[in-house]
Length: 197
Image (cartoon, rainbow, N blue to C red; front, side, top):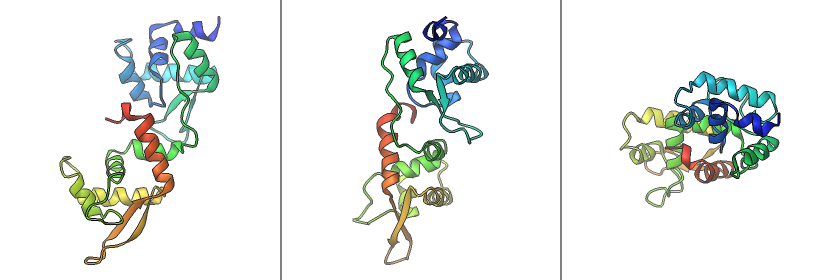
């Protein structure tokens, strides 16, 4: 039996294959595939992904992560899935550090802080302070200054942002996005807007 026929056999396998259009986690695939296979469980998605990987159709992009691993088609898998389901599947963007992507994508506060930094810094400032970002995110319940400060430290450790100076009055650190952070933000915005609600 050909791989295309194999992908179309079985409700669960077909549901997982149909929704895998961008790099996604097991949970994201499960949530997207439930309308196609109402009895599908998260463990079933893991089983199907394991079978895809074993056959060389898919790969784990973040194998060192314990949770929130990202899966996507291999080039061969993409061709086969495209033919099997009659839809073009775009390749994953080149040059993305998937480990950093996962570190940002699956930590809500870190993601919100990082995305907020994409906006223009207030009052002609060369960067953002933790308190400026807290104010920017004030409409979101549960985000406190300590959480924003922690997210900034984590983004700094990932080298997605850098310290660009201090404020005159209070000597608070100012942060701005690095070129590698900009590249990651552009990929977040362009490729994955559908899974970032």
